[in-house]
Length: 160
Image (cartoon, rainbow, N blue to C red; front, side, top):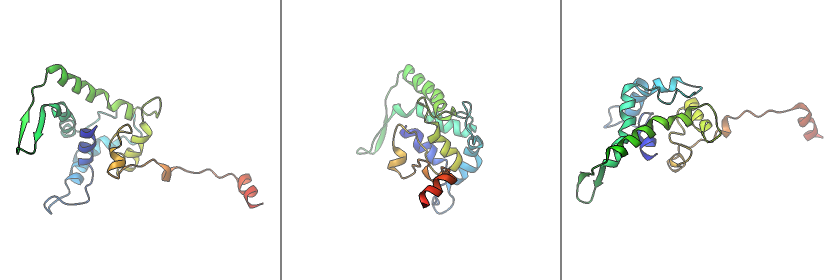
């Protein structure tokens, strides 16, 4: 989930320029990630509907367990990983987009959370199970987008 949040956040507008030259997130969104966001009303096939560069970034999660940074020593070591672990990560990466894009909020999908992301773009980059969006200030519960129905009879009773 940590990898997904940051790779996904990388492909959206950063609001600052790298080396004062360009907003890499804006560029990645415009030319790469926007293909995925053409699915405004998400369905089961929206999850892996991505540009090839986005697939390349997304599937780097398979290699995360092999890299262990040793910041104190100033270099990175690589840990051997059994092929079964790599395949497990690959299968997880292939199946995990389904619940967030299936078009249903329950049972278990959390689709409304990700639907808000596809509708408004600058919120809910991660998953509802792990609170990185709350931690990094990109969480949106959708309350400000809900339409309130007001009934005439209720309004009259409130005035009396």
